[in-house]
Image (cartoon, rainbow, N blue to C red; front, side, top):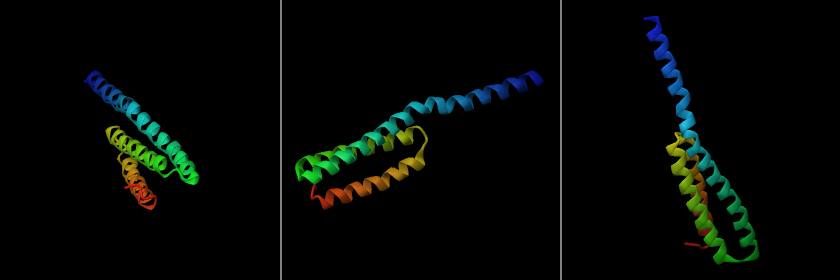
Length: 103
C-alpha cells in the first residue's frame, strides 16, 4: 500500500515538473517574438524620424505580425496573462498606424 502511494506521488510530481518543461519552448519562442517586435519598434522610430513613411508603415505591419505570433505562442504555453498584455500593445500599434496614416 505504501509502495503504491509513493509511486503515485512520484508519478504526479514527475508529471508536474515535466509540464512546464514541455511548455518552455513555446514560451521561449513567444519571448523571442516580443524581443523582435521591440527591435522593430526601434527601427520604426528611426525610419519615421528620417521621414520614410512607406518603410515605417511596413515595419509597423511586421511588428503586428510578431505580436500576433507571440500572443498565440504565449497562449499555447499557458501564459495567458502575458497574452492579454500583448493585446494592449496591439492597440498601441493600431494607434501608431493611425497617427502615421498607414491604414
